[in-house]
Length: 553
Image (tube, rainbow, N blue to C red; front, side, top):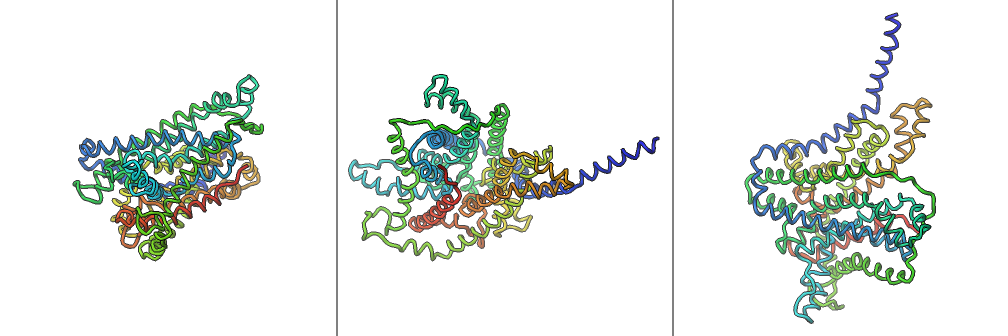
């Protein structure tokens, strides 16, 4: 009897062992190794470097405290304004009969694909000291209308370049809110606007909080806008302070100082994301509705709101592009806009400058390689997180998105610390490694979110038919998630090709990138050449978003 009893038990034990060592377990192990190499290793390097040095007192120095206060001010205020603007735009475009919604949506989202530092260069042509508007206003009233340099300019541009994130998140949340609730309020006597404000807007609070946290964390680490718009008026943020420490050598052991500042930023960002996650757990789920969305009629205000919306969106999107165009074509900044002062010399010089062309080639190569690596790794992690629920896979997904809470300049410093030991110093592969660290989360989120809401019945049918877990994942889930992974990889490529924060610190003699080339032109005073390349990047970005954004009715 004991032998007979032991037989089934041993077979079950062997079966459990096979399940633990099947293809999914091996894939999980491989992905953990990849996340360890590209995420845990650099983050750990920063933590170790910060803990070894006696740099805590640096955090109490005047310039660090001032930069920290400026960072919190610019990130917090711009996040609030971006959420307000994005929510208003999303509600008007998705829940009202505003005229020209499709074209307005496309234009309103366009700042998302324009690099922030390119946007900063563009807005210098609109509200810079030598812009046509300020020169005209100075001639009449004796002073400029508004100079974009300083804290207010930094906050304004951070808002413009981040409100599309809030707009996308709120629009997605609006589509999940059943319209039956608004219809019930309408039946109860509420008007269209009252139903919208009393029913729909309160249900958007989780999306509004998530938008605020995501935007604030991103703006806290932005380098391009504060460096171009803030520094001329001595408005220093932590990102620009870190860059100054590393470039000037004004502090002893700058890497340790930067690591210490980076740990503080990391703690703040992680606390914000944890708070967001805890609030999200208390959110109730609403059943989806098949009712047709009944758009709120704006009535007599439709025409006026439509004109106002068009003016605002055109001011945000088209005016900076026109300013870039004039900066590119004018012979010198500040000269009158006349036919005699127009030239193509700056555009020709930009397209024939060796450093910029090499930077563009390197950026395209690194962007494609980063997109492929992030696409494959992100697809695999997203599949495991969404389809193979376990503590290990949930932890794997959490580790994969950690870099979103880490400022890009801190990731760059981490790889600078690791570069000599890994033999990557002064090579383009160092930038590629930093890209993979920073952008893998984009693909993971693009895959995991839609796949988590997809029924698993097809996989279960495949398993009943005899397929292994890996085979079911590849044949069913992988094919379903492939379009999302491809979209995420395209986003990675578009983001990497115009990236500045990582590249500006990891720059090496053979690894010039386009973003650093444009930034260098701007810093060296070659404003027209910087504007020419910025115009090229902006137009290409708008072309991409024109193909990527689906047409809506």
